[in-house]
Length: 395
Ligand SMILES: [Zn+2]
Image (tube, rainbow, N blue to C red; front, side, top):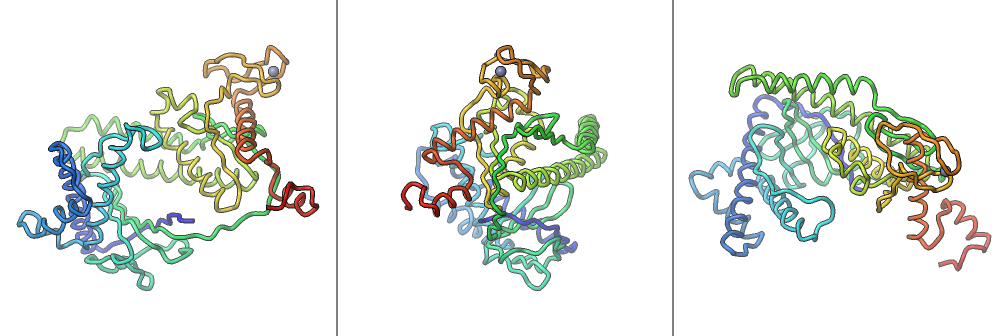
């Protein structure tokens, strides 16, 4: 399975300059691609992908305003072209329903400020000893925080807004299945409590993360009060970028730990799909937490696959916080302030989130039951039954 491994890069001042040039070239090619496609679309012409590439790279290098494109490795420019093609196509396919998921906005031109990146395939980079060689930039020092599991097929070199450089390698990693267990859990992903499981376990967002978020909000307000183009604004922007990184890293670290724990403890984990969950359709989804949820669900899927376990998102909307998980009665919608309630039909006392997690577990099991023809016993049970000759026809 393909995964990303990310490391800090420490380019020398000369290499930083060289990288800045390559980032600039890739950005210009990306923006030229978008412009050309939009012009052609407006004129009602159809332009092929190879023709776009020919015009924005090959032909562009011949004109004086773009001749500096030759200073960048051509593979970085071709990848920028591909990125633009995908961004444009996603936007184009999105409203007509060819593409799943939420509507994709019009691709925005890349900007000089903010995150910069280039993608390189095998012919644009190589690993030379402890260093990462990037064509036309040189051999960059890498901080190897852990070994790569295999030879990378591509790398993205990134400069974050706070000035740090990273290499994100795409590597093929062998699955490492854990022994099969029989515990299963439904999880409710929320705002105050990151995760509540159907077993009643509560995993909160750590306090220091919330403290950092408050500091970040304060820094952002300070930034908005500075004058445009001033030195203080540049300083404030950098401060915000550094805080953003700290919040992001802390949240990612916590999400990794949470995901690995859930996957280790359970043979199957069920969650509501954010696209169908009630909250995702409210204004709350716009909040900063939205990114945290998506990240956690992505990590759960990744780790479940790696460790041979199941992560399933229930595909339809379940009124998980309205239904009693003990008797199934729908008690009607409740405001978010209602943390605990007692079922009027069976008298069971519920914690709102634990009850939701139990409903998610039941809905997830039912969906898998339908999908695989009625057999959702843990795999070892199926295997044992098969050996004993009681399992329906050995296929
Ligand atoms: Zn009940």
